[in-house]
Image 1 (cartoon, rainbow, N blue to C red):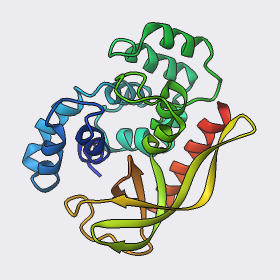
Image 2 (tube, rainbow, N blue to C red; image 1 turned 90 degrees about the horizontal axis):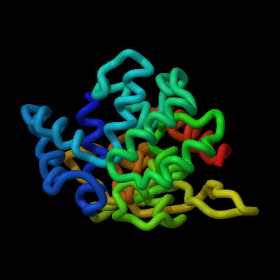
Image 3 (cartoon, rainbow, N blue to C red; image 1 turned 90 degrees about the vertical axis):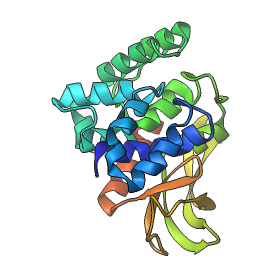
Length: 234
């Protein structure tokens, strides 16, 4: 998938909720879903988001690609082999860039000093390790918000009244650690502009309760693997 489109799908909901990005970007992203002539406008809007650009730039630099290359954007939001060329040092570079975009230096410096080996610049690293809301300051860093903000995966059980009923997971604290609890049924909203033919049995990716794209089995495995990798290093 086109990198700008993929990023727009995941960034739509956070902008709609007022958590990050410039005012009005979500409407632009929705228009772009059906009018590809708006790609450059969507690209410029994404560059104004607080947290996304540093990750895309670092992943792109590590792989010699453009930051809006489809695989670069996929590596950040979902995960793929491009992250294998990244490292904890890459994550430290991201945090340095985040400190220029709103992350308090006291938090950023502490994160760099305590960085475990093996971290990769995936969206769920931003949620779990950097901390949801720490860069924009618009969301409290709670377990519930981490569960909402992480990109999660799930199998559609039913489509009804504009909602998806999805078999997925939830975060919980167990013995002082954050773990995934399987077998949870959650409701996700979706838009036909992004998911025109979603149905029972499809695997979808969700962000803040919004299903923005279908996942192949390989993508689902990558998302799960990188999510569990970050959680295991906390």
